[in-house]
Length: 228
Ligand code: GAR
Image (cartoon, rainbow, N blue to C red):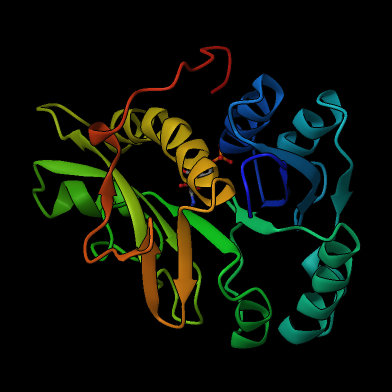
């Protein structure tokens, strides 16, 4: 992948799509070096689909409840995604567990954002659990997706402090603001060809990445405050 060609993304969502909006905004500005070819939601009628339409991007609904089982849903999902021939598939608040059949099909070109500093707090209710555990620091992670739930190699993280008086909502909002910076940055690295998965090994600029990149170590990109 070279930086003189925009890579193609398909973004999978299940809800409001604020991370999708951050990606659409950065794609429109040219900063992302990527274009969003399609957005697919497993939940009909969610606001993220409207965001895609407003950006002129095909917005598809594929309701998992219409399928007999997980593999049948995933086969249909793969069919929809692959029509758009993406270089990279982006999970942005996509709230379905994926089988190995799906993750292996997109090995090395499937990213997820998770609202915790992985490997801490895999799964759901991450903000509640971080508060209950008395964490002083929390955040978000971008990782390549493997068959293990929230277990694939972590590419980059953004950290926020946990402040006195925080509740799950205030903490979630602080993390989300960073998610909107983190995801576009990781996608750009992939588009520039700096990020690669070789088997289980994560390479950045051709070197083994043995700990996640930290967003605060990289220049801040401008963000559009209209999304949230
Ligand atoms: C984000 O906080 C994302 O990290 C989380 O869902 C939210 C989606 O928000 N993802 C997960 O919990 C995945 N396990 P958005 O729809 O506004 O982007």
